Amino acid sequence: MTALKARVVEVVHETADARSLVLEPAEGDRSRFTYRPGQFLTVRVPVENGWAARCYSLCSSPLTDDRLKVTVKRVAGGLGSNWICDNVTAGDVLEVLRPAGTFTPSSLDDDLLLVAGGSGITPVMSILKSCLAGGSGTVTLLYANRDERSVIFADELRALTERHPGRLTVVHILESVQGLPTPAVLRSLAAPYTGRQAFVCGPGVFMDLVTDTFTGLGMRVHVERFFSLEGDPFEEPEPADEPAAGGDAGEIEVEMDGETRTVPWPKSELLLDALRRAGVDAPFSCREGSCAACACVVVEGEAVMDANTVLDEQDLADGLILACQARPVTDRLKITYDG
Ligand code: FES
View: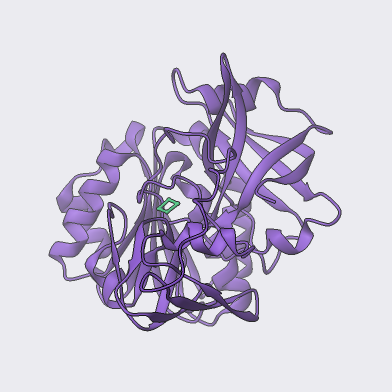
């Protein structure tokens, strides 16, 4: 139930240290691979004593690409990225979790400021292509790299700029030419776009710099941060014993993949566990409150979270909660994953 299978149909050498995997869902799993621009896949990778899991953003667009594509850049000492770059070839079958994440624009018609550092271009590329193909807004991309040879998707970006001259502007920031970006440089680059929402992905230090600078300009900033998962989310925990009937009982109405179901949600149980116990294919990855794979929107009722290191105040104001950390306050809640 948990893991999906995807066959690697092609491995693309993007740069010296980045590979893209073009993926074809296994027959029967296709409907569980639907995704929104900017979401990620959790991939199971072998390690010395068993298995680990790593999250990789989809760079493909659900609007323009028939197949899913993730791009992986080597990280010094990185178990997952080096295993993928060294070992995965066309024909291999990967185990993955269904696409998830909240790094996705609420409307493809908005004007956006996208900012990528290095391989942080991956989810940004998915958003960019989707906005151009399915929306009406204009998109500006600020793209920082070490040097020209490390620019992933250079040709594709050039072609998109030529195809959408009035709607896409790409500004390259090369450390080898301009040096590392400074707050002053970022402020002047963002100045014409302060009315837009910004989507930022890249190394942690870079995202912190961009976020501090842009929030100082009054902008709404969405960031995508990845980290190594501690556990193996492919090993689903045993559900707790059936809760006793009585005062612990509650229920939740859940909308997902266009269907609505009502399932029990005992007050002693976390929302994600209650949903999966009831057979709802709710997405998740870390189960630690850190990745937002499990995020859903509360439509009615109230819940509280044990932990949250990923949703910001605006997300919470928008009604988002993390199912892996949520406990009910009211006896009945209504949530949606289809927002
Ligand atoms: S599964 Fe990662 S935050 Fe819930």
